[in-house]
Image 1 (cartoon, one colour):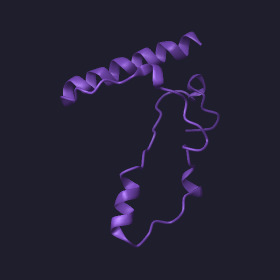
Image 2: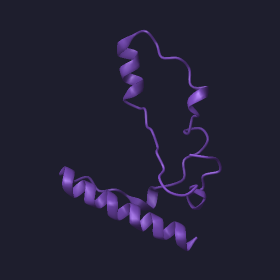
Image 3: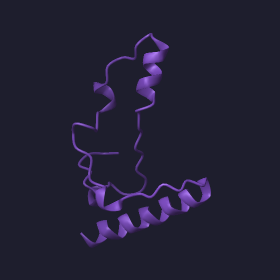
Amino acid sequence: MAIAIEKLLKLQSVVTGFIQISGETQQIEWSKIQTPTDEVVVPYDSMAPLSEDLTETKKLLDKFVVLKLNGGLGTAMGCTGPK
């Protein structure tokens, strides 16, 4: 658990640095950060094909997030499979 807290503090430091560089002033409420549920993490191969409608595709892409983990297996962050 101490390793996970240490990693969260490192992430907080990195995000704070990014915010300072980008000029964003919005505060992150770190107490609200939680492990994502299976409902919000969708495996790529289970996603439906994109619509031919470009407006609909743009709406979906506005919500699309790619999470790339670097380093170890991510088990300290709750990951159960390969990255």
